[in-house]
Amino acid sequence: MTNSILRLDFKGHSGNALSARLDLPLGPVRAYALFAHCFTCSKDLQAARTIANCLAGQGIAVLRFDFTGLGSSEGEFASTNFSSNVADLKSAADYLRANFAAPAILVGHSLGGAAVLAVAGDIPEVKAVVTIAAPADASHVEKQFAAHVDDIEAEGAVAVKLASRPFTIRRQFLDDIRGTQLTDRIATMRKALMIMHSPVDELVGIDNASAIFTAARHPKSFVSLDGADHLLTKRADAEFAAEVVAGWVTRYIGPDQPQGETAIEHVGVRETFGGKFQNAVHAGRHRLLSDEPESVGGLDSGPSPYDFLSAALASCTSMTLRMYADRKKLDLGRITVDVAHRKIHFKDCETCTEDERVRDGKIDQFTRRIHIEGGVPEEWEAKLLEIADKCPVHRTLKASSTVATKLVESEAAAGDATDAIDRAEVSAET
Image (cartoon, rainbow, N blue to C red):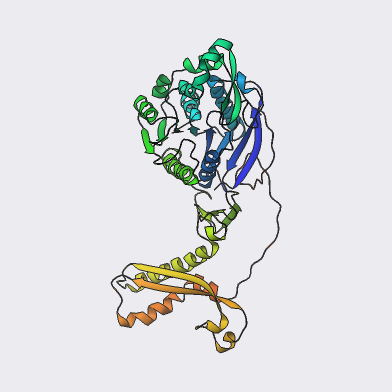
């Protein structure tokens, strides 16, 4: 649900340029989050993109980057280790603090989860930490190349294949992960913690989640990612994780107010690049998604434009009837309005005039069904139908409207997420 993806780079712990993406929401930013990817992965892993996308849709800007020597970042992977990853996270936090705002949220996947646990206590602005499929200790990653450990210790460095790609692992990497103890850092970080883990994770067992939970102090939560694999390769699993995170962190970053203290009559829509038709909708204080069904190439992640139009008619009808009932002190039961939309030929339009029925082409038909719990006295029926037709949206649909359209230039402002940033290429240093 992201609305802008800002491409940037910043200096990592060793001075190398680290490639990053900042997923920005449409409208003011509620908080900034820092995402740490898994061992030998990258910022562009589907789970990372999906989670950043969803959080941005809830007003949370997410910085995801490639650790030194991985993805599009500079540096040599063989010279890195767990400690250097932690140092890169500190550099990323410093970059956010200097150019936007310090991260209030840390999210880490797999070994990246261990890294955010290690660094959380060193970033004072962090209020909430989320781990996804994280090991309870950095040395757990050694299992991924267990068959080569003896050779690494004997020869000092060995090229191993991980995820079908060659990586050189040096003895210093082994020494570093073996010498890292997370238990004390978890116990003393004093941040709200949410642990997400799949019971069927074959790479990092569920016992790791138990160990992290036991070591942590309250407030702490556990969410089971039932049926998910380690990398959250199913989009639905990544979306579920993102939605839970977005809901949970609200308790620690405060409520969303996209347009300030007072909602205004303004709607903004921007493509998310998360799907062919998916758009982020910013209406007053509210953030929504608009999409199309899968049958026409969409993701079905939100109502379609005509769904929104039907919803506007239905909700306006309900509100208008309620206002009338309150004013007349009518004891009206709960109102339910159902609206269906379709296109029909003029000749099939029962509510059209004779002159309209002979026209060629099609017309939009909205079929509105109003249900009132407990029913209504017969003498009220005609009046309530008359009042329903007076709903403002009904009048707008029945009357002629004008749409004034003009092209405007986007304003690019790297430090202000309220401006339109269209995939700008920005290089910045800490």
